[in-house]
Length: 76
Length: 497
Image (cartoon, each protein chain N blue to C red):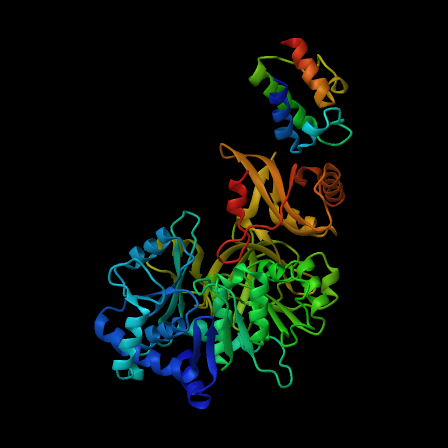
């Protein structure tokens, strides 16, 4: 599952650094804009059946690959 | 004087001068003239009433120009087909012309094709052709097939008059240096119309063509040695090919003292390529030209000056005599200075159209009120403050992404303006036909390809371009793949995603 999320992130962010550094801040590093974030939420729903409404979590709770993995895990 | 008459003259004045040389042999002007005259007689006998174009298949054998002139002196156009073309395409062309005479200077698996040995024997046995058989005026001189967007190649017909108008201008380009012997580099395959620039500018001026084959081009060192040994003085190629040559540090004026004129066509000449070239060959003349196959190789030219190298973008220059370029908008209305739109070429080198393809001819070719031929290029350009033409991209390289209209060429230009970036190609990444991301392939110097490097590139782009134009994905490559014609292979890169 982690691998799958990382694949999705790499695809959306366009940079393999998300796999190399799982604590990289996607917002600070300009790797994920709001369009990408929406795309990520849709991809999580499609792949894991986990629905995350943008209002439920803040962007700060989802700003690194590790945090994203944990949020998805906690909801499966 | 037309093209055939010129060669006749040169063959009489300097019979023993080398017209064409490659690793496959040499040919003097007299040999070119005599052999083509005899072969023409045989072509005319075997073809009789049929005036179908003759297919000339091969690569860089000196008999290629013999076959070209034999065809036109027999009263028939020729259609050059290079060995680097995929077999399927070769047969598409043969089918399109419909059971044509095929002269092959390289082995070809085709029943009825005439081999080089056969042609040589034939030429021995025949008398020379009478001059009233020659093509002239508005007769078709050659047909060059270019890739169509629908996949089926389009045969661009170029007339004798087109080629005369073109060479009357192209012979005057560049600078003549004292005591210089003009030796033209032929890099492009003869089925690519860039080769017309070197072959016909060279032959109609009585110069020598030094032709390099594709195997030789695989080895940069051997190739450059060959160019040096043959004292090439006139460089004709796509900019990508010059970039390749410049990967060798010894490609400079000290090692190549004869090289004085550089001609570019077929692709956009970037500031970085021109700058590097001027650095290595400070006293040389670098000429940028522009034109589509449909208007006989090129219709504009400009000699690059040091001031131009300070600009972000090089001009393609001014139109040649007999040609005019107008800029039109989507409704066909002509635009004024500074406004970018589709470039339409009007003038004496515009082709009469595509070979037996009324439909596609009508789409892009036309006749003006004053009876001149016109061609819609599909290239986007504008006139600058300096009255020079500038290209801003291909109309079909314009994409729509997240609702924005984006010019991929524009992103490439801005990438190339970054110090470390030596080559750039930007393509859309598509999923089920929909654009998902913009991806940049980059050739960089002094960069390891780490995240920090990618970030640096993205950040410097953000200073120049709106965020939506900054490629999401950056891929570092050793070199940008090229097509057989030496142009950037966009399709290949797009397919690799």
